[in-house]
Image 1 (cartoon, rainbow, N blue to C red):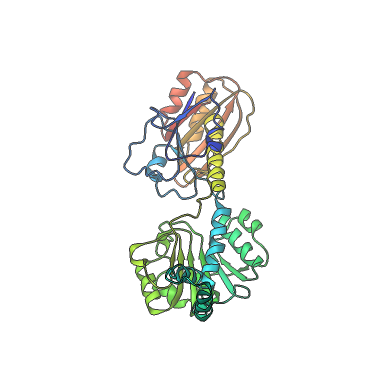
Image 2 (image 1 turned 45 degrees about the horizontal axis):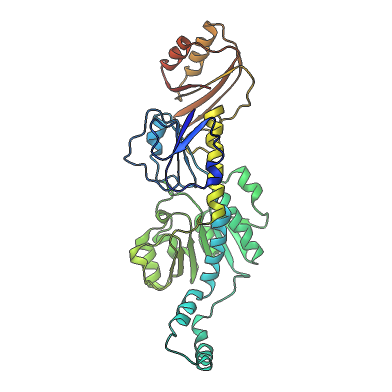
Length: 389
């Protein structure tokens, strides 16, 4: 029986996938095999020795101590793409808010509480509406930084709105390239993209390579009157440089899902309360994806969409299955295979994958390894964690 400790409010669509015959699921479970969470911050919290995996029902994992997990052989899953449509639709709203002063116009209308005559109100609105005029999106150029699941959907959506679209992503995957329309212009540098874009939309993670990616130099390189949309992470935009660009008028509008105190009331800043993935559908999709990945890992040892372990899958080939995590150094796999060979345990199939300093292995064998064999493997130099499934 596997134990899955939950944090936050997880959709029943996902939790319902854990069969009662094989899983106990709930908050505060002792000695859990897995965590399933959304925004719960785990930094500073002890990780139980029993913990095998953490599944984040969402894309970002800033709330999880990934490096600590890796060192303990704990697989960290996320759910890339599960909330992509929800974010894409909010970006569409952001583009419209950036093209016209819709927010300002609506606020003006709501301020007219002292006007009680409909005719008088109509005349006032007709006289004042020019204050909120803007321009159409059609024919303008959208630059997209990051062409993953969300970025590709945003790029394709903008084409349907009649925009020209250019994209920059030095690490675009083959899967993402297939999703992307051939009409999207690929550019070779961020600086080149900045010079092309009337609107710039960010869809990149926050890490050591992207923190402060949009700073003073980048704002200076943007087209006059450009609009920046940030539905990625707060940290990818240098906040001091942002405020300076808004104050100077270098940046016409900043539309973001990540408010900060210094931006409140700032002309040109349109801020939302981090609602990019806040739809019932996105929460269900993330929960289902997270649960599915956890189940396949706990029962079969397969890894899909991990942020710290390599993608590793192998169809069950009968017999018995063992998996182990090890430091990515020579001879570890050979040592394990020697332990099995010395006991005349035949290997049916195996897969070995590595990612950075970590390697992960799935081995199917004909006969069940005894406790002595398992303990010898567990004690082998370089082995971090061993499981028998």
